[in-house]
Length: 235
Figure (spheres, helix red, strand yellow):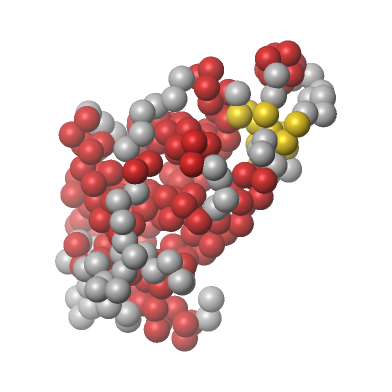
């Protein structure tokens, strides 16, 4: 994404649901945590390997944590006094989770598969989300509620515009919107949100096409680390 494109996106209006938005309630934000048996029955091709769903959830959640941390550091560099603020933590987790949801929604997973994997990823993030505040039901609900709001700002015709709207609203909520915040912060966050969403759409779509249905005997071999036999792709 060019500097000019990033500037244009960063200056676009955000913070409220656009009148022409196709925003809707995304039912798979609030999903129950899947059992280990359910998530382990998933086999996906991810990072060049066939892995079980629980491994995918751990790997993907680790990437979300790094992304979340990058956003936090970018804001903290501009305003160190906000570092460690619980309100900022909730908003950062929510904005990052909204980017995840936008990518999963655009990828070609079946609804049931998407719900199961998102539940597993969210379970992996539970401890990370509770670093500053005990991640009880109310704290997690606050993060998910704000993620819902950020997700409704997306532009389904442009993932880059979705990134800009999420960032603009995020900065406004933290009272860091221009003229208070430098445009460089807005451009930087818009760029990394846009990259994150678009990259994950391609990666997740590929994983969804290579999601495998396995038998218990093949699953047992995978657990033991033996060579995975040919299996039937999930329809």
